[in-house]
Length: 266
Image 1 (cartoon, one colour):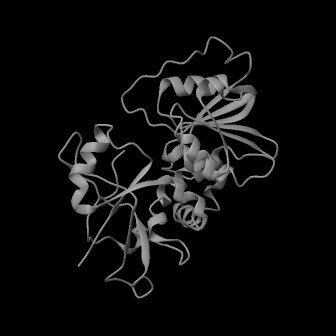
Image 2: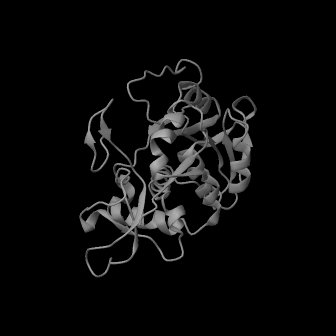
Image 3: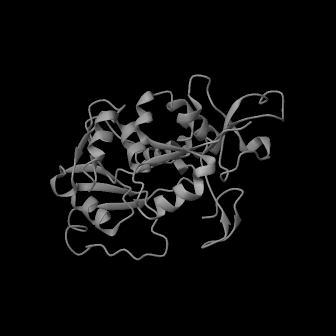
């Protein structure tokens, strides 16, 4: 799970990061002066191959375009389990990934969508995205598909419980070296439930012949024309504040979704 252009290794020191938007100062004429998205660690200026850059559409604000990588992850999940009209869908885990999945699902007609999270404050995010909200115990069941993004064993177990017979859980969580225990001796077999993983590292086989990774990222940037995604930007700090901000996030003192870092260049 190394990041592109990462230097060092965990637990540290490590130069790690994603979701970077900047303006091209030197390079091919077609990119010169353009706002572009890249996957690069926090740095005020850097050099990368032109192929590692994705142009940001003119009508997508740079501050919103930082979400492109997360929207791309959500898009890939919907390609893994495409919604159908009339589906009953839950998204368990209202972090950045889950919220982006819910934002894309809100565009589908005739579907019941519910964003599920243990944090009641995430109800405001759900309302801004135009989807329902519930705590895990109160979530509506009988779901055709559940997208799980809480990165917890409890969330994955609840996702299975919410399924209708023949339903599918699509798991987007990253557990690292943690073990997850699931109740597969209850209704898993009798209801013929399915559990499948989704990971943005590869385009799903059904789309691979027609969409490259670059195509997928360009589509994610195009989808960010929707201002509803601004609800995911919950804080912003300057680059020089990053050491304090990172310590606060790691300690749980700065809750939120996307904490954007601003580069103030001379």
